[in-house]
Length: 227
Image (cartoon, rainbow, N blue to C red):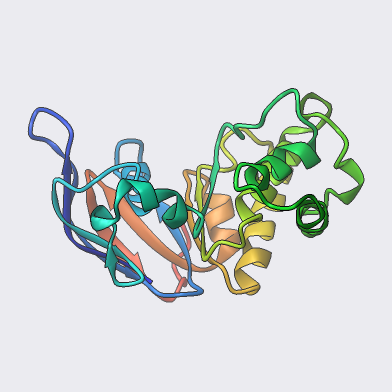
C-alpha cells in the first residue's frame, strides 16, 4: 500500500531529516514509529499525505508516486488518509457532531448522509451520548475521540496518528490505542508515531525504530518490547 524508495528529505544546512529511507507497509498493518524528537517520524508521515515532498527518492501510495498527483487532485488523495494529531484541532464553537459533520459538509454530502454517517462514527468511538457537547465540555480523551471520528468519516484506507496521546493522561492514552487497534481490526491500516512506550507495547504490533533520519530497526513481528 505504501512504499518509500530511497527517500531523503533535506530542509536546511544539508542535514537530512530523512536519510535514504526504504520502507514498505502492507494493507491492514498496524505500524508504530518510535524514536527521539528529530528522528524524522513526523516528516515521514507528512510525506504520505503529501504535506512534504522528498528531496530525493519516491513515496508511493497504491503504486502511485505521491509527488506526481496534481494539486487539484490532492484532496481526493487525502480522503484516503485520516489524520489524528496531538493537539486535536477541533473547532471550539461546534459540537462533537458538528466537528465531524464539517468534514462531510465541505464535500457537499447530503444532509441525510451526514446525519447517518456521523452518528455511526461517533457510536464506534464511544461518544454517541456526547455528540451535542462542545470541545470545552469534553475531557482530553473525549476530544481526541472526536478527532478520530472526524478522521474516520471518509472511511479512509489509512489512519495516521502522530503523537495522538501526547496531551492525554495514561488512562485516556490506553483508551486511544485500544480504539486504534479496534479500527485496525476492521481493516484500516494504522500508522502510529509515539514517544509513549506503554501504548506501543500495548499494541504488540510492528515497531519501526528511527534515529537521525534513519530506520535503525524494523521489528516486523511486533515481538520487541520497548523499554
